[in-house]
Image 1: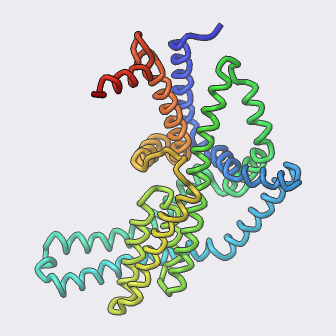
Image 2: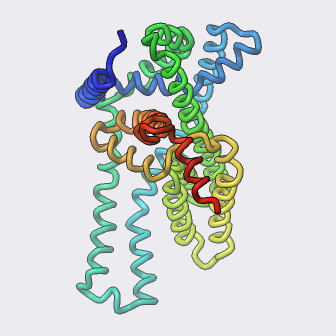
Image 3: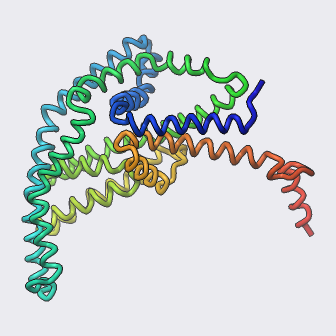
Length: 366
């Protein structure tokens, strides 16, 4: 016998509460597995395509793994050392940038930097604080990440989990499908397809957009001779995942560094600005519509709210699960609204919603 709506709501509420408690207490333990699952989910379409080309699932997983190892080795040898070095140098350069800003303000706005003025004290303390605490903050960030994940997890556990998940992805989804309640299986499958479409449009699409834009910004800025161009491109590429934030922070950082490095040579400053304008034009008109499309259903405000709330409550693992949960909630909410519009609660006991709408239209006609 099917459960009543009240009983179903109670059990799903208990399941959600258990999930939140597990995430709260075991988030740091689950992190490598969540990362591995996310990587496998991202790469599953590639494995499916290789299977359609004639490879077995095991062979497709082996090809993807070999390619990932090669990319990791190249990144470890060519990109990561330069990225870390430029980040440390940029932190050391901040006091110089603050002093340059002080000189500029003293020249053009002398009253703003009178002895003992709030602006002068704030700039002096800002430069000294970043100089002293910047490296410590960087080391603390690495240390906190290392305490949660550590080097062994990053280099061993996450890739191993991703490989096994990718190898068994189709079998796992088939097994889960067999465990669905038979009465509700068609509805659950339809909701799962909608959630997968939403996630595929956002995670895979935005991940590809972040990679393309980050590479473009880094290569273009380094080609222009901008110092720390690799760091700026890396930051702008990652933050593109959050709508508008990557462009604002990356653009402000790049243009600020360009003003410091090319002051007086406005052509180079304009070139750096043009790099970001071109990147944003390509993202808004080509990359995002083509790779992400309109299937996501996640408003930027809800996305930023979800990342902030889940990040504050559950840390980094909370940020990882925020987008899938919001996508699922969005799909379920749209399904609930659709059911409500078809119900007698909306249409009334005397007729369906459709009949009421048609009747109202007929009454409005002269």
